[in-house]
Image (cartoon, rainbow, N blue to C red; front, side, top):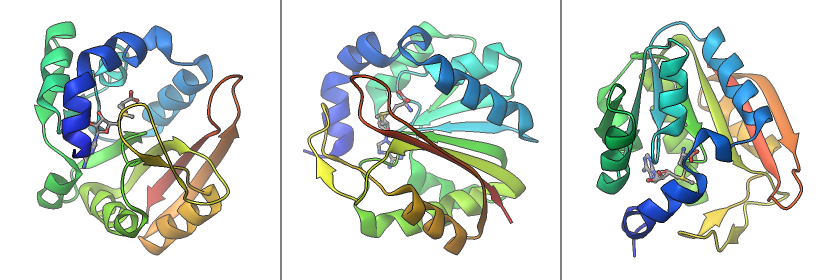
Length: 196
Ligand SMILES: C[S@@+](CC[C@H](N)C(=O)[O-])C[C@H]1O[C@@H](n2cnc3c(N)ncnc32)[C@H](O)[C@@H]1O
């Protein structure tokens, strides 16, 4: 089953368990809010799932829209937050959106990509950002890019140092790297980077 098909079958369950602001941590909220405040230009929540981060950023006054390849997620997001813009789409479609965004949030939306596809994905994100636009990545932190059975579809841990190197090779400048280990959760990393 493809990643999008796997999410389609569990979209409602995901939305109920993880797709609310209350299910997120205060540390993630602060990080995403601070990143968004520092961005200049429209924001994209790529792989927005049930749309809670997009709606949160919109509620704070940001010009933001959410994109996800899973129709069920887009439908849930539109139903929950009718005032917010959501579109069906994927990373791959950003090839046609050059120099468009002041910021792209890819919060756990690249975690299912095979490692060989990550450099290409970062190049697409770089091209879709405006010059000096910023990217905020959230992902599972680990010593190797090792696959594990995520609840919905196989995902991978990524070493943050290696992700920084790939970002730099794609034309980004590293701004900030966070590592966190919350009780009962997998290790988390976030990287903010600027297109240069
Ligand atoms: C772990 S969920 C994260 C959802 C949301 N960002 C959050 O923080 O709850 C991964 C998301 O990535 C999306 N996704 C999978 N493949 C994608 C692709 N090629 N382009 C954009 N999003 C994708 C999935 O549909 C899903 O919504």
